[in-house]
Length: 114
Length: 111
Image (cartoon, rainbow over the protein chains, first blue to last red):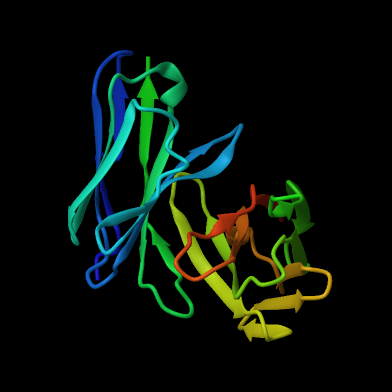
């Protein structure tokens, strides 16, 4: 299996621009997570989908952030408009619900908003 | 508190054992996990332990769980320079919820 695939790997944009991050989970997994990692705040859960349905979006910072999962093999995280404080590494992870529920992380997207 | 707590840094010499400690919060947590993050990479699942176990060993890794004190540790035997990374502890509190991660412990291994 290719693992969790994220694109782009790096994104540099200007303040006010729209940013779209993409994730392809591991085939057969039914849970998908978006995290944000910064030096100051560590690893933060933004949103969690189960069977394509958002279960917990309490970590989404504000209305500028939105996430979708139109099918089991694709998810997007959109920031519009972007701000410099959104600069971070954004990780997508997937897993299979069950007793163990381990999560497998993608390589991340490094976002820099100027 | 509500957080999973870890010490921020650990420095060891190559060949020594490393012990990374973690305190979690929910006594009903079912599974506890250790992840490793190398520079510029995502988090890699290292190992996990079910809450009714006290210990789990996997090659150079030994996980110890003290459920009474809600304390989890990861011991790396014969630490190598390739073990230098950030190690995250995480707990699963309830079925159908996301993992709760600590802020990570940076392990530095000197030769």
